[in-house]
Length: 527
Image 1: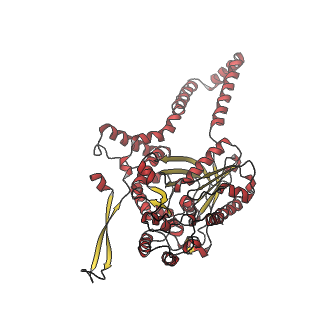
Image 2: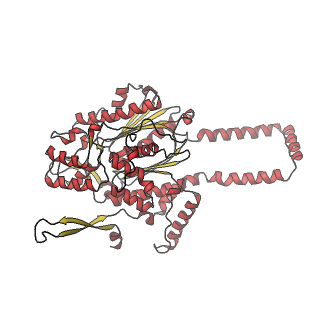
Image 3: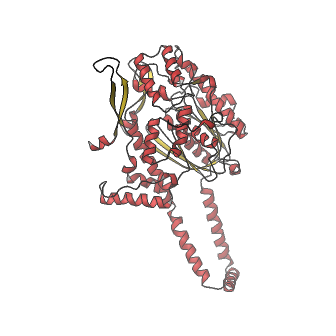
């Protein structure tokens, strides 16, 4: 019971002056009880730490043998003079030339195998984020007013959406398709394809222009869109539009939620490792009109309030000569899937309501499930990115807790993730999620700025939101050479995925960026 209460938070809400009833004319208040994100840093499971240290263990032979060999060689060389060393090398070479040649042959072979077996570096050349036309902008007041005029919602549903919007952290300049606010049925294949063409081709046109490559140069194409999956696929639509080459390796990922963008990056990385001298394009998007819910189920009305138009396109390369013009190098990808748990599987679920309207139901367990997935993900990621001092404290406290048992036996050490990353791109799902993540990871408002401002300016653009956040940091000219960028996203399934990039150069203010017309007005205070 105590553990359950710890996940709840209370909030006193001023309901204003009661217009009627026994309390007419007086101020009334209500107590709102919310489920909080679990304090996952205080309950880290040791088995997930082992996943992160698995990488270090695989390379333990190098870490253990190389220092020993260096010490032995130094001791041997240090015991004789320089003249004796050269005389010994000359004598050995003259009388045992075969041994010497064999030694060098083995050395060259070993070094060659080592470098050939190393994964190819994956470079991020550049990326583009689509910004819709200004005529598609909509404020929160206009949203409610046009929703009322569309005749699709009753007053109770409108009032519920109004309350959600007021506390959402979303601003008055987000974008939605015009058709969703008409009386027409907008969840059609025609409207879905029209929106897909607009946002996807808009992002790709900008990407090809910025990177100065032809569509035919692309050898790998990965597209992810969770809820709109037509036939032919979106990837086929892109190949057809740009007349890409016939041997392109194309993939279309569907139904994987807001974290699918990182899954697409992971797939593109694997394909680049297997196909040298190639470009890969990753497109991440979601269709708003096709998934618009016109019913009365409150859990299905929530996505209407948060999801907005958006699309990102990323160009990756495994060509070493692209190092000079690339912005970032891929460092790590860590994926976590909690789908084996029924509660996690059902917390974000597409289904039909009592009126047979299709919608995306958001369960009240979402925060708790998301916290558990994120706990697992960052525990696995920590040994790969944290400085050695942080790893030592983190690991020792976990082991001490496992040995002595009980939460009071040893208070867990909370790693300082600000020492591992300079830039945080946390999926802009909602203000509540960002608040709880900031509290649990002890992040500053500066760390959360890109995520909060993206939510305010563009809303929740699903899997592309982490790229709008990175675009924000670039527009502010904050990305310097050597900086590490952590992108983390979570979505239905339930999944939590992380990707870490390292900046290869200082990123100057881009000439094409979705923030250019508004960056001077950000950050906005009191969100």
